[in-house]
Amino acid sequence: MCAGRDTSWMIKTNEMRLLLCMVSLSALLLGCGITSTSSSGGSRLGDAWSLYHNGEYADAADLFQELVDEDLSVAEALCGIGWCRLHLRHPDLSRTAFQSSLYADQEYLDSRVGEAFALRDASVPDDGRLMEQARGSLREAPSYTFSHETRINADDLRVLLAQVFYYHQEFDSCYARCLEVDPAISIAPEDTLSWFMYPNFQSALFAELVRLSELVSND
Image 1 (tube, rainbow, N blue to C red):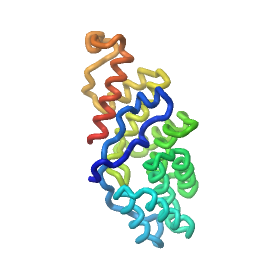
Image 2 (tube, one colour):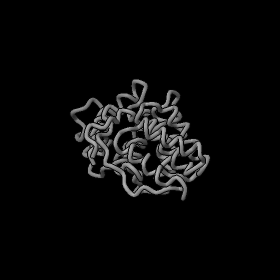
Image 3 (cartoon, rainbow, N blue to C red):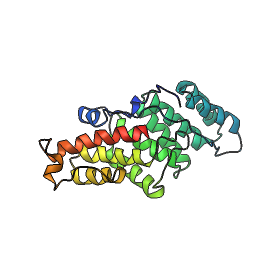
């Protein structure tokens, strides 16, 4: 584990989104099992991911870009650039990299997941596309784990969807996603006693959303 890794790219940019994402992901476990989408450039691809794992995101992005320029392992290298840009707090550049990766391989799952997070943090969020990518990724891989950071997984996507639903005041859908992450949630909309300490169910749900953000970040 790389203690103290900066994951503040997970924080949304406008006021409500910032509140919903007030708890960012903590330090993430190192990835493993690096694979190349091309037989060429594989060693440098591994080197780039090693830099990424060490938190050297700018250097990793440069090496990934070299592979793209040489037309080697393009989809994965562009995916790597996307994740590096997220960590470097450049969500718009990150989204561009993920989109380019998906142009090279439209089914590249790690890029679809990455684009969902980039869209949330983008200067002009696109929640429709975000939900399409997050839902599609969960349908394809209900037990998803990012190939190179095992602490980014399906529950992060579920919490992300719950945040978007809350932002759009779709509280029933938000609650349903929260239940998928933790079926033992102690509040229920029809059970007023379960949230008597809050002025309304929405406030209690927000507190649960913050708790779940902490929960998935520590898994």
